[in-house]
Length: 334
Image 1: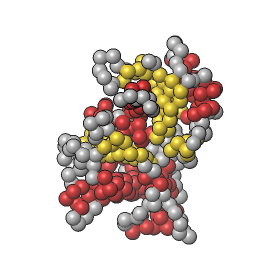
Image 2: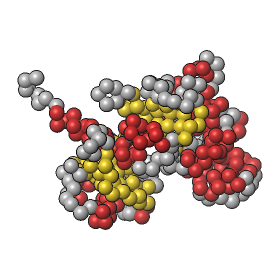
Image 3: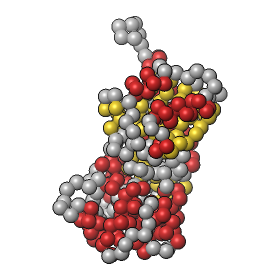
Image 4: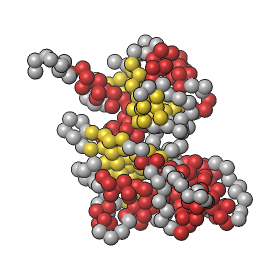
């Protein structure tokens, strides 16, 4: 069966035409793959229609979408998406029989036992995976995380909205940034610092605290200036970002003890890999006292986000579709 698989984020939409590989059970064969800028389309239906018109030559009636946010009834709840995502509307507009939706980091977690784990660059901890749970964390337009627990029946994935947790400053400088973000106190989610837009926010905060007019206007410009050592606040912002990412990831690792590995899969992390490695990420990840020894046994890799969300969404869809088709009907004999 051919079907559409997509990974729809706040910035880019990855879409593919896929099918189950005939010669490798559990593997996905990609027949066409495109990446679109979400802001270029008035709706998700228009984005998917463009892909269908350009790449699909046979009727397709099934679609699975990994989306930033969580499914709440017939809508995906998330502040970072370019437009509302309504599965029923997509079914009607595109003439599809089935539109399944899952969280984007849930999809990435399903890709861990596929190509994702093999594509990373080792950052810290042991160089090989253990047998325990795995954690995927990704700062992009927002901040997502999910946990993969190995299981004989194919693995279990736990979704989270960890990026909405309160930002917990560690250094005096981070406390100053938090006070700048919320001068009267109140809730500041960690993704307001640990994300692409959060990196720019950190840069603007540091400029304000240092009494300097910000010269950079995009996260990409901030990372480029930090790499070139041409803007002191950009250097400090990337350092603060890496350190906060280390603390956040270490906090999640204390919760799940992911000896199967932590995979940092945000959209731009691979481009700043050397800066992450040279930063205090590892020290902040390890925290202190007795937990340090346990976290030192957790391997951490940085991997490209790329098509892994699409692959994970497709694997999830085939897994659940297979379970549904083989389930014993209620009341039938076992």
